[in-house]
Image 1 (cartoon, rainbow, N blue to C red):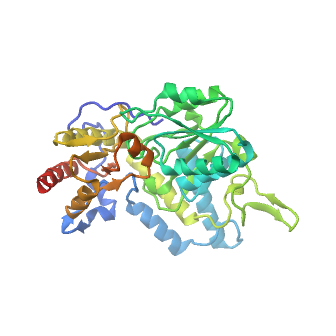
Image 2 (cartoon, rainbow, N blue to C red):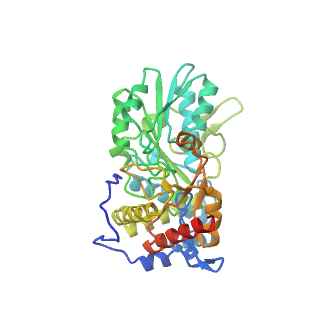
Image 3 (tube, helix red, strand yellow):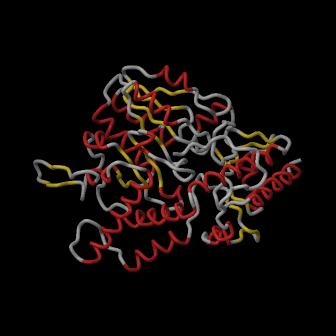
Length: 422
């Protein structure tokens, strides 16, 4: 299970088993290009990861040789397409440790999965004066759908606080649970701070009070092992494009007992058994929640992405990215006037920062001209920025195809930017 213990103070990689980093980088065609005449340094992995050729080729091969709409045809191509789609569901089930295959629902991404639960769970279980609990570190995608539910139902949204390190205050979270609390929705990892929440412990606290938990796993799924049964999560959502797969595909895991009771959130083809003008009966799980033509090609790409990640090795990914984080943190903090936001003891490889006296957009634009891609702004976490009294940060985020030398380039570029802005 993903745990991310605090790293040792390492300068360079000391991982015992080291996949060939040159070979890994050669798997990602986009990393070989130049921007503004410079080799690209891609540090925007928290927004989306790049795609290995194995994923690109799987999608190209599928479109070239297999493509046909799923579940609806008796001909050869439709049957092959359906088989590939359902095999992808099996791959996801195994990857996250779901008990039942029908607990895996394909969606358009994390946002779609959260909205599905907010609507369907909310329709069945939330009423006026009930309470929905989230935290101060949530992405907008795990705030707005619950606000919409609260407004629709006349319920109340409650927010658990964080401290100056960007860590959830567990004692305060626990105090917010009441008999009216219907669900806790929480990110496993903060996209803007990198904080890794003790999610298993939090789920246990909620379950002791009879409260189900939705986990936003968008920033966790690509960094280490996730086992939904070990976590005992009621719902778990993530996006394919965060784990080196294609965009437009995601996963909603839900425990069978909840999915069976929840009404579908979309109506259309494939989610029905029978339709008359008087009455429609719904399909069995998971198809009840997969209305219309799902992005089945995206599912095939996600299957290939998971296979690729497993070929690299989750143990290596977690260890190496921790070393990148430690190295980047030490390099950046040597720069006068640089402040990192998100200093939790347990975090992923994200170093959101500001340079004193220089706007984050200016830093990001100049870095771009130096061939270095970072994210700037609020990162869809405006409440976090408000908490720290800032209007955004520069966010380099690192992946297992990044190198220590690229971090050196970032640090050198930031020193030049300081001189440039005087």
